[in-house]
Amino acid sequence: MQNRVAESYTIMSDFVKKLDKSMTVLKIVKMGDPVLSVKSVPVTDFNDDKLQQRISDMVDTMRHYQGVGLVAPQTGLSQQIVVLEVARNTRYPEAESIALDILINPQITAYSEETEAAWEGCLSLPGLRGRITRSTGISYQAFNAAGEPVTETVYGFHARIIQHEIDHLNGILYPQRLDNLLEFGFEDSLPAFQNLDKDSNI
Ligand code: NI
Image (tube, rainbow, N blue to C red):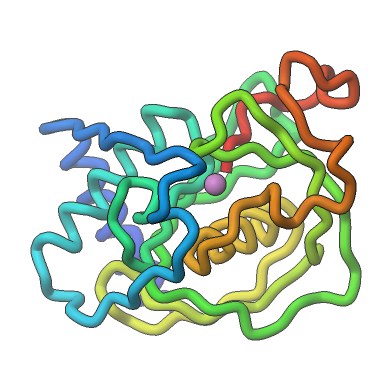
């Protein structure tokens, strides 16, 4: 397990080195584009240079737009690739930080019975927010960028991000999960949203 963690860090730091050399910011596809409403295709070849380049470009793109997660379909590629990262934010020091993570072909294997409603945003719906009820904990299985299987159980915002991203891979955008259409609107106009962290586009 420790080795796996160490390997993951090596892979992550390689991505960071690549960032220094060349930043590639991909175009983000917005709601309405058909690529966001179909189930995306599992990755089968982990040795493909194009896969590693796409992951690196997705990390660049997520950071550029200050998102906390991004899936390949949001960059126009219908494949089951997720990148996520929550950087420590000095303005919100209490917010949990999550190290850069890459999930390929992820699947949720268990949901907590307990649920929680919270505001979500999405880079494919710029300026909009919706209050979405999700499980407070999930277990998932996936492959990392090296093609090794991983299983994890995560809670809170981390669990929310992964549920949002796996929805994307199944062609579901968060408005389809709304309990109440009145809890959906523009972030500069929703009274209930005004005092919340506005940087957490998933
Ligand atoms: Ni999203």
